[in-house]
Length: 305
Image 1 (cartoon, rainbow, N blue to C red):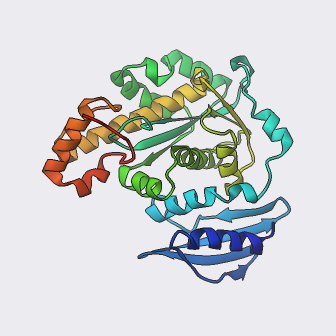
Image 2: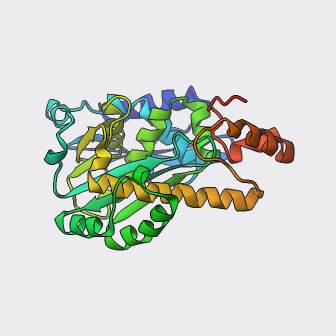
């Protein structure tokens, strides 16, 4: 596929979602064009090189609703940009825990099963020296730790290791999910963004994360960003200390965000999706109105009294 074909593919996809797409103009090694959605606008660039074509959204605000919407929209065309090599598919087969690389970027998320609060995704780089440091700190999967332990370990991990944390607040989450109702696509976009941030910090060819959905979801998100890493996905990846450390940073970000929501709205929001979530939902609607529920909750969750 050349850059003109990719432009046509992206234009068709965005136009179907009520975007206005301006004609492109040639730039060095590629082309660029402006897209509009309501009152929002942003610039997309397509570059063509020896390794094929890639999409660049660096001219946009990465924390905006428009950025998240376009990223998720492009997920539907990323597999048509370049095929996943057979060798990479073989690498993606779940290895034994003892087969994990010594130098690895671990990625994990928190909040995907919580009705209230954001989706938080973190990445942490670990090598043998940093592994020893994290072991000495007592780092393990966040599900095995208390909230106080998570909050305590969070700054220690950040001080010891290169890391990144992406927080998808409820307004952005609900907006994206409303257009592309598939949690796995949102997770793949978030993981891809975290990995992109991490490879900008450290030279590490290996990334490890827990497996969700089809293995190609995250891989295609990386292809779209022009990122070349060996992606390893397996169940119970949190037994690797890099993923465990990422799970702590992601959960700490979630807990911090929940504290901020509770301070802002003067309400206590339950974790997870327990039966009492329905009662809290009703209280919030009575106090602030149903139109504001999307500020604190993931609206696609089905909760009952």
